[in-house]
Length: 569
Image (tube, rainbow, N blue to C red; front, side):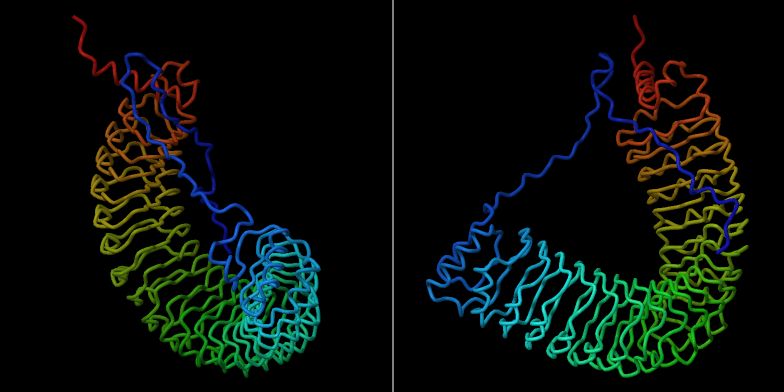
């Protein structure tokens, strides 16, 4: 990744907020109404532990905020009324339970028809062995607890289809986990697992396996026996390799990002149903052509943050690819076939060493293009082909000219041109009538075209760190603007027309050469950030300017009021 020496946009100013002006500041000054947000009244609900009326007769569920006393009472009443076989759902979630009481454990032995047990959001350190008695249980939610281990009896839940153990403290799994042959979804995210037992390969019905954010350095070879698997998520571990997965032909999503992989697993080319391949932040140096050639259904491919030096020509075979992320690699150029990706909608190539956009301009379906922090010196005229482009990021390159053809990108809502070497902006930029964000920070601009005032949908205009000596009064026509940044230029004045920007919330002009401010700034009713540091402000009384932005703002209001007052007789 190349570092630019001319990048300024990381610098931040401590903005001084222009707080709402108190109505009592000056007796003869008109008051300004400030709209405030009122807190919504909270709806009154049942007290903790209160049961719904419908459960007072037939208790087929227990899904309420409880105390241990309420739970014990529920158990007693259910047993007394001989309704034990009617209970199908038991929800004990988010009740700060540290253990399951003896009474409830006894009760669990008789819940032969229980199908759903929710224990999430407690402080349980272990699950009771009696859980193995729930022979018809289909869904077990024990996420967000303090579980450090699982009882081996969990293997007796032959009908379990969903097991959620996210956000616990598990370091290992019992081998009995392999007995859950009906299990379809297994969530083990955010634990402390260092290994997975080989017996996991016996889960023949498993469709989703998520073990992200653990401490795994390896996966068992038996994972290749999970032939029903559709989603495999092992991101954020310490994996240096993944065993063969050639038999996992039903997989549609493979997520191995944030590991230490140097190559893709053997057999990945057999995963012809794959729609998403996420390999972000590993150590892969090459995309093997034979691997991607057979992935006809792939719609999202993510190789951000690897060590790629090139993109194989065979990438053109991915006819259904919609999202491609190749940021933060060492890519210098794109193959001639790249322009054949006719379904591509999002392309991220930022932080590489690319010097040409010729192939990119052949992608008519692009909606988002990020080529920031590359070696681009020009924008080709063929950019007009990107007629549906909505977001264009060209920051931190070596552009010294913005071609008029950019004005043909009518669908653009965001244009980032910061940290280049632009000296002027063509009038055609005003044709971008859908643009909401325009970032021109860190260039060498001395002036703006008057036509900028025609960009009436603009909400954020960033012009800091340039060489502007003046701002066109036409900027006042941008009445929808919310943020205007003019920091670190060479401005000697601000146009009074800025006072007509009725929606402006942020106005910053720190570090300029301004001696006075237009009184009309006081008319900015929605202004909340007013950055004026490091300007001489010689024409404003010293005691006012030294008082900070609020004092200056008040002074402008007083002066504006006096200028409109009728002359004394």
